[in-house]
Image 1 (cartoon, rainbow, N blue to C red):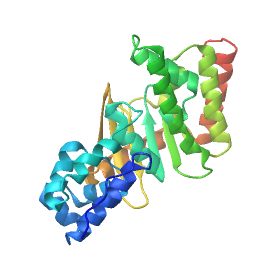
Image 2: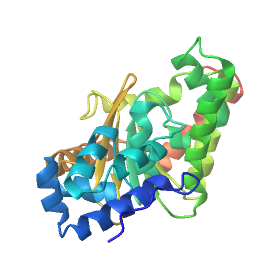
Image 3: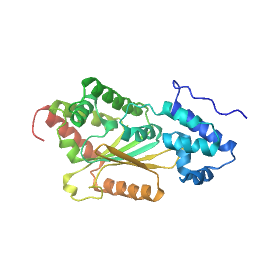
Image 4: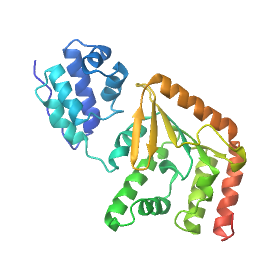
Length: 279
């Protein structure tokens, strides 16, 4: 039987690579669990590779070629799927985000990428890399804005964000940038495109004080959680870990203001910024 053909980089290489992995596995008569056992990973991880929610890394591609007798196909073609506009630590998360049916996120210190305006994103990226040339900053900003197009669809993915009050009161860019950023969030909330709740300072100590988290659900793959720190990030699919972090998010929701009170606070702070008052 003929082997898989090299991928066309102008198409969707990551999705095609996942489809070829499924075909190669089935030709060998292996289930996802059986292939996972050969490669010391879970069957759900293999499923995520096949669904395109996770990227095939070069080292793992070589292992797939050995296990499936594909004559170097996956090692050659994972390079085509590796091209990305995102920082290396965020590539897998951004690609998983694009496939998600539901995204639940807690943001402790800044407005998260899917809710950002262009001016806010530019200020954030410039702060991250103060010596980077302007054209590189603009490329990063454009990549972030392309992510926000997920919200052009009227209903998918479901986006539920808990914003710490600190993210709203930290002035990023200038006061005009903040006013525009908060009005953008307000508009998304008013047209029912995003559920946003504010975790107020008055909530005191809470279950996620150690950092941000993003939970993602998919139609045909197990859920994932993404952890992010300073220039590092990690996707996790362990069911027990995902379940624990889902509980963390649920507790944050319980401690946060209602969507209606959150909207009122967001709009009040937007007016404060717009009128150059101290919020």
